[in-house]
Each structure stands twice: as C-alpha cells, then as structure tokens.
Amino acid sequence: MQRWWVLACALVIAGCGGTEESGQGAAVANVGETTYQRYCFSCHASGAAGAPRVGDAEAWALRTEKGEDVLLASTIEGMPPGMPPRGMCLQCSDEDLAAAIDYMLDRSKAN
View 1 (tube, helix red, strand yellow):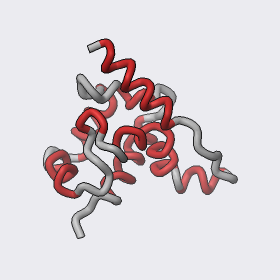
View 2 (spheres, helix red, strand yellow):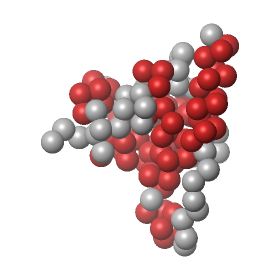
View 3 (cartoon, helix red, strand yellow):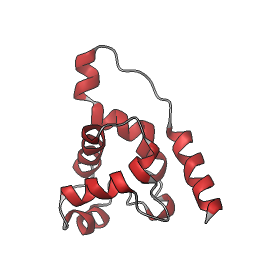
View 4 (cartoon, one colour):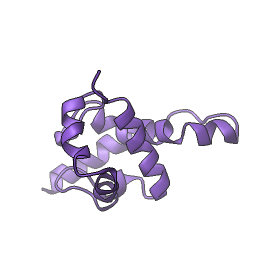
C-alpha cells in the first residue's frame, strides 16, 4: 500500500509544472484546464490506478450518474487506494477542483 502512495505522489509531481498563463483574465478563464494540466493529467490521461481517462465517455458516465457534487466530494476526500485527497493539490480551492472536473467532463462527453 505504501508503494502505491509513493507511485501516486511521483505521478502527481510529474504532472506539476506547466506554463503560467499571462494575465489574470486568461488564468481565470482557463483555471479548469490549468488545474487539470498541473495536477490531474498524469493519472487521468493514462488511466493510472484506475483513474477514468479524459475522453472515455463511458467511464465518466458511470461517475456522473451520482452527480457532480459527489464527484467533487470524492476529489476533495480522495478515493483510496489511488486518488489522494484533493488530487495532491493542497493549494487548490474547491472551485479550482470543480473547474478541473468540469474540464475533464467537457472533454469526455459522448459524441
């Protein structure tokens, strides 16, 4: 179990970085994408640890059936064994996390 947390932390850290958006308006407009790129990408792009992949409408549909409030609560509290609390983004506000969820859901809608 401890190895899993080390791996999860390493994946999250690998997803950190990215470029800063110029101007406050751009940062506000792209907070969901920015949060996703910095903290969510490493697991949700690859499906690591069972994370639903962005773009997989079926996987996300199973989760959204419970409602977006439940998705946000799961993100805040974490989903053992794979999803750490707040996705390891301890400085993210609840609004930042909700914006990242919205970003992932938007890119995972069925065609």
